[in-house]
Length: 618
Image 1 (cartoon, rainbow, N blue to C red):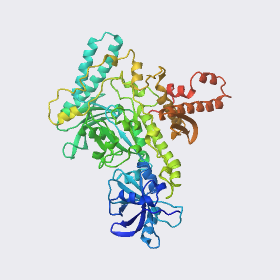
Image 2: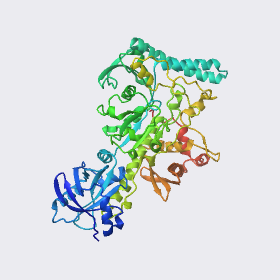
Image 3: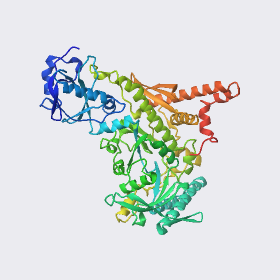
Image 4: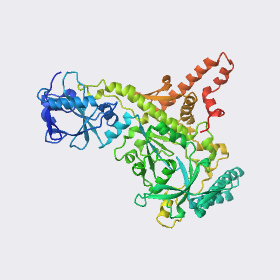
């Protein structure tokens, strides 16, 4: 190797001197003697010309340190370090071998960034050499090391109208009053019928909540159900444990609770979204964490903590010791952001996905990582949750499964393989592209033009009652009911609620339902076949390429200027191929089937969205 002069430095581990080394700053390919003086002025660790190691990172089980650093801080190599002599400084060489063999990095002291020394293989034998990579947040390396070793990502949930809809007596009364006035002013019988059915659902639930408020019990099917007292964590009372009166009606996906046990007006009627158990079971299947779980909501804190406790009563998704840190409440009017959720360096945003019913409430840079679900509307359109072959939260479960599978397939089969080919002499540009959750998500906002007003409280009303303040209504709850909220037929309402929208492209052609539908159908076919479907995304020459894998076999591919375009093309290609395979199989049995299937884009698409006879109940 042609040895070029670098900046002479001394390397210490704590107070122990390990040896002398030379530091090379970028651009590494053009270093020479004449640059040495300029580089000294830009020494990244101050003017002491010393490299002091504070501590070693935790040992990695399967991922070399460079792969972790490239994932959370890509192409952030600050300098290269090479020992001057192995024979005269054996301690530095032993330290190098220990880091190299045990998959540990050395964390440096000083500087605005957290700097990690990574022991690198070299084309020259018996050379102790390192790359120094920067991480923006202290602690982020250790958190992501654990996640990558255990094949775990993060998932962030919104609460209201994503997983639950909650109402107090006041919000029920507001909605009943608004709907009654609307019915009185309406002449269209169809609209009156739809609003009357919604009004009836509100009244029935309000009456159950009134029983809970007044008697600490509810009468259901001639059976009186008393409250059960459940232990909960209070954010209002200095994080003390309190006993809340609760009635659970699992057959109805309903829970009645009281945010402040001492104030009956804080009683809340909560509807849990159907298929939540399916999604929850996937996240913690067989005791293994597939995702680290967080909550980000605009609701008040004590309300948010209680809503999450109802969703995760056994603390299986979020450990009780981590609950206060993992339930993040954002003030109304501010944007949600993954940087806020992971403010303590517990995860990198590119390793996280979001489940929310609204896209625009998230910071723009996080929106590609949001899986948008249709708003939960149990009063306006209760049939919406069962109108499709796959319930909304089962689709979310399938999306999470595909995101995790695609991310770690890219990490294992592409990134790790290329990382093992990188050596000390390589240029930083030789580092591979690192996977991002956004590579495997199709972000789309559901058309809310005809959507109903919010069906539940936002937590502020409960908070005012907790603090003993008079409540004269919530601006959010007192919005007038829009006339466009009631379409001419209930089927149209269901289509709007489930997000099967028809959008107009600039040229006027209809697009919209197909992207999510094609992918959903592929996932449903895989589920019926006890298999799985994955999307693998790459970027080449500013073009996105997406491959569809079915039981590890490639069945479709798509190219496009955007990831969404490529993924849609790949999904449609895969469905056509599956249809062709199916036709070739059944042709000897039923010659007339081909003509029937050719009338649509593919037979599987029609079958999976219209036939529910053989679907297991979720």
